[in-house]
Image 1 (cartoon, helix red, strand yellow):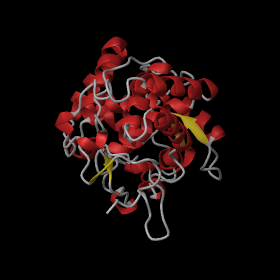
Image 2 (cartoon, helix red, strand yellow):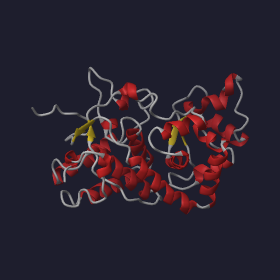
Image 3 (cartoon, rainbow, N blue to C red):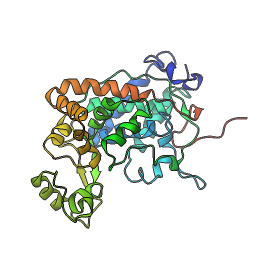
Image 4 (spheres, helix red, strand yellow):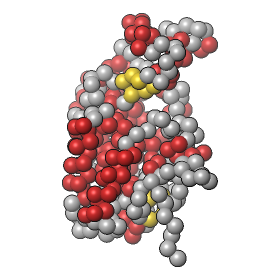
Length: 311
């Protein structure tokens, strides 16, 4: 079956391409392996693309679309510009799939498969990927603000944001665990480091030795330096949660997870039982992957371009 022939997210199946493109999954996995072996840091970036896609207009590949002279696309919106990468790798995967099975595999499905394969490549567990998504009809940068969680969001705001997409508080805390292979610009936590609540002081809840280290790595005049949100050389593990329990989290949206009793319970359980976290991360990713696109278009030949419909 072609992705353009399905009509709603409830149709997604794990065997969607078994007949129309049986080599699709192996092609994606092989390419992801190649990319991450060349650049391990791509794992977090590729996983992030799927998340940023699904939270704006649903899982429809709209985050991949280029801006035009008349329209600012999602990838160039303020919250995304300069913080997303992996577009060239997605294009390369799409090109190989088009050579093998022209007009079959959607860009949205590529993002879902890549997220799973990238996670597994760096130590995470795999999960069944349900397929058959329709690519979106547009990409509007203005829709990014208010859709994506922000680095200063508190626990209540995060829970409400995820709930609007059919995800619960547990999903929110579990999916935040993807930050274990994530990075952030130094400027993303400057307020905590240099001007907490407008006091020109460091956030007292931050571990003192971490604050000293960060000030050396992230001087106030260099906001674009990068820091890992986890700490195990890009391995998908529970180090991120361990950092939260020892006051070594970086972003406000990270440290807030332990401010709520239920959030603290999930964080603690993840540290105590890493296998439980790795399994449940896959379950939450499956749920997120069912967020249906709100502006369906059909199959796109080029993920970065929305071609005019044939009349």
